Image (cartoon, rainbow, N blue to C red):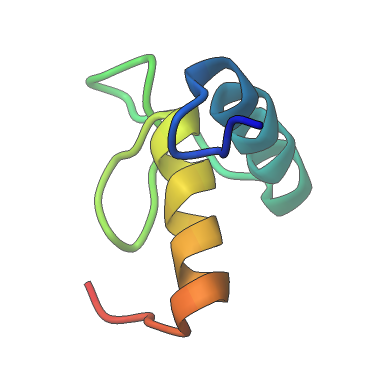
Amino acid sequence: MDTIHEDDEMADRLGREIVAVLGLHRDREHRDRYQTAWGAKTAVGIARTVVRIISEGNTSK
């Protein structure tokens, strides 16, 4: 079974759901990215960051 770290399609779907729930805004310069406190991230990056924070409990940049 693929994990979110191996499956880009799964990560993209989850990332877009997170973006919608949190109401994140698109980055003005890079339209495929969203603004976060950790800089602009793609939907895939957002999903993988959230999963890492939950699994490791690490919120540092």
